[in-house]
Image 1 (cartoon, rainbow, N blue to C red):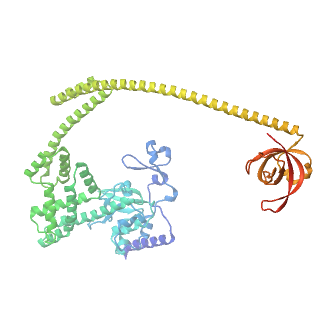
Image 2 (cartoon, rainbow, N blue to C red):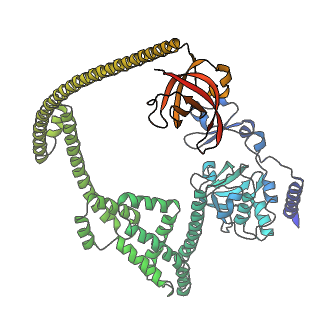
Image 3 (cartoon, rainbow, N blue to C red):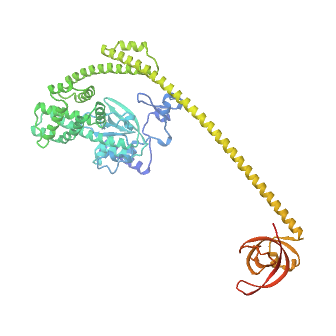
Length: 597
């Protein structure tokens, strides 16, 4: 097997043991990086390491990251161990968020006698981890950590997997946050880069997938370009052009978008997006292939000829014949001229766009000069208006700016200035008239308010007098009622004293116990007449409905049933009587003496 075979077998054995035991080795970082826990990046994008935070320039401290012991860089040999299975298929960049991610695309290096073993960096996503670490498109990756790519490629060959797929698959199986050292060849110089695997955002994943597809298309185009440069048969050339026919079909969509885009800013945004996802690069390369095919009248596969013809027609639509082009730009606005300039800058490598670009740019210079004069005119006019709003109608600085403008604009601005003065004077007259009207209205309102105030005072006074009169009348009525009650009580007291009668509250007491007051004279309040039994004898009832027998009543004592009177009576005792139905009852017998007031 030889010394190299023994060495490779030893590497494989060490790798398997490390994978099984889970051991981690250093990857040969620069001594400064291993000893310094603080990492920072300067304005040029160069990575630096410092032992203490105060060694970091103050303006870079906010972006300084501390390298903790737990983030010790992974070993390149462990990387190989993690790639020992599951790498038979091409790595799909849209599935990479589940593992470590650098935002780079790798491609196998074409075989060559003096080429060092490694894989090519075919694309680097802007602002991705690889871009921040310093990877550049065209770099040759020759080592990861302490292990050379020659050993990794040998492992990939043994697994019958392309070397680029093998390495990408290994990176994908590392956790985000893992730090790795990479050695790359950039021309004849070897550089060491330190990168930290990350996790892409959804936008980065989508953009990276598009760039991956464009990278593959560029590789297809490169193969066709090599065939076109070589002296091959017509059949081989037809096969070569047929292989990229679908690319012309896809890029026709981009050309249609450019042709239908209105406005320079929108067009620039469209072209910027095409540049970021590398469609612009693919399009330029396809234009070059088309130029070669048309110049040399090379055969195109019949199945793909329509795609080539449509692509050529779309380019001619973007770059029409000169007589039509001149007619177009003669009537174009500055806005449209800007859009045409962006398009010409975009397709300048094709045909004779350079002369037409110069024509458009010279027209734009004239338009821009006119636009600058118009802008100055508008700015002076606006300043005149602002001054007029503040009541200023003389400005020496504005006079100098007006003097620099063309005659027609100076005349227009002087007329405008006179108009502003006239307008200001009219506004002052209107304002004075409005102020006089406002004062008049205020005086009218004040007079009305005083009248309303006087009227309210009179109404309040009237209501006060009425209230006092009502209160006085109520007091007088209360006093009269009180006096009447006192007189009534005095009259009753005189009558009771005259007949030596005592006062009882009601006839109920007599009904319940007539023997208690028998033979005495009493004053009874509110005896209600009920019915007559015989002449001078009546049945009366108390407030609670108790019946009493009253005799010796004068003929006109009661006029109707239900009538009430207060009487002085003498208690005789009890006496049989008849009720309303004729039945016998026993009633308390009272003898009428006098009427109480």
